[in-house]
Figure 1 (cartoon, rainbow over the protein chains, first blue to last red):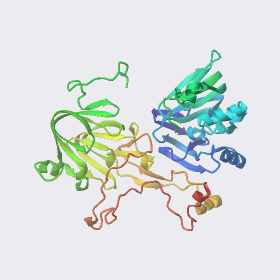
Figure 2: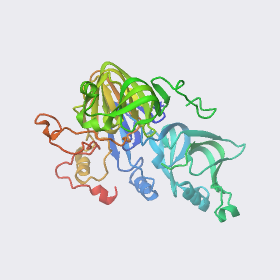
Figure 3: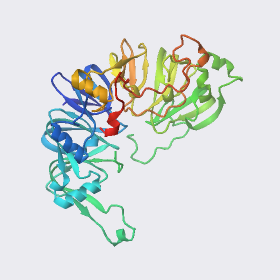
Figure 4: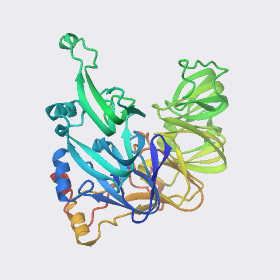
Length: 216
Length: 265
C-alpha cells in the first residue's frame, strides 16, 4: 500500500523506480528524493481514444504522472483525504475527487446510462456525477478527496443503503444503484423535506459518504 | 474533539487551559505581563487586559527590543495585564510552538501571537518573519502542521515556515520539456503544466513546517522592504506586494504564449 496517512488532509506516497502514480495536478505539497512530475495530456491512462473519451465525457481532470524514487506528500484544497485499497474490485468515483492513484489501476470512463438506462442518466444528473463517471479497477490504492470526513457504509444483501446524492463520494464492489424518489404533494407545494431524492445502493460492496453536502 | 459527547464544554476562567489549545481552532493564553498579538485575532478574554497599539508611548522600550519590523507595526498590538486570552483565526488550525534559544521563520500571515521573550524580525525572504530567542508563539495553518526534515522540496503554497535550517532556494523542474515533443509543448503551451515546476528546496539540518493543503491563508500585509533601503538589500526598490509565488513557469524564449488557454487544454 503506497499511501500513508499523515493527518486527515495529507497523505504520503512512496515512489519506487518503475512504478507510476497518477495524481491531480498541483496536489503535491512536498517531496523527497528525485521525483519528476509530468503533466499528462491524456488525463490518465490509455491512448488518444481514451483521452477524447474523457474529454467528451467531461471526466478529464488534469492529471500528472509521478515517477522516480522518493516519497511525495499530497493534499489538495483543504479537503479531507480517504485512502481506499482495491484488490481487484471496481471503484466508481468522480474524476475530480481523485487525488492520486496507483498506476497499476485500470482507469476508464463509464456512461451512467449503462447502469439503468434513462434512470441512470437522471441519477447522474441528481448526484452531480453528470452523464459519465470514472472507474478504477485492479489492485492498488486510491486517495479520494471529500468535503468533511468520509464514512464507509457496507452494502450487504440484507438490505439497501440510502445515501443523500450530494453526500455520495464513491462506491465499490458489485453494487446496483438507483434513484429512489419520495416526492409527495408537499414537495409540489414547496414544503418538501429537502430529502426527496435518495440514492439507493444494493448488492455487495461499500459506499463512501462524506460528512457534508458540499460538492468539491 | 473527543469530549464532545455531552454537548459543548463550558469553560470558566479557571478551567480554561493554560497556554494550550482549547480545541484545534482556539488557543488560550494565560496572560501575566505582555504578549504580542496580531490585530483582530483575539476572540475573547477574561481579566484585566489592555491592548496597546505599537507606536510611540510607554511601550517604546519593549517594542524597541522585541519588534524589529516597522512595516508590520500597524498589524500588531501588545496585550498587557492579567487574565486568560483566547486566540483564533478564521477556523484555521491553531498551534503553539516553543523556541529555546532558537530561530524560526514563518509566513507572516500565519503568525498570531508571541511572547516578548522572542524578538520579531523581518526575514530576508519577502513575506516571512523570523522569530529569535526563547519563548512561545502561536501560529495558524490550513490543516494541521506537519514537520519534516531536510533535504526536501516543498510546494511554495504549502510552506508555513522553517526552523534552524538555512533559508531555502528555488528549485525549477522542467524535466518533461525535453526532446521534440517537450519542445513543442514548451513552445505552444499545449498539454499544460503540471503546476509542480517550482519548489522551495531545503537542505541542511533543521525542520520544515508544512500545512496540509496548498490553499494559502489570505495574507495580511507582509511588508516589503522600503525602497529607501538602498542597494544590496534584496527586494528593495520593488514596490508592491511580493506575491509572485504562484509557481509560474518562466516563459521560454520563442514561446507562443498561453495558447493552451485559448484551446481550453
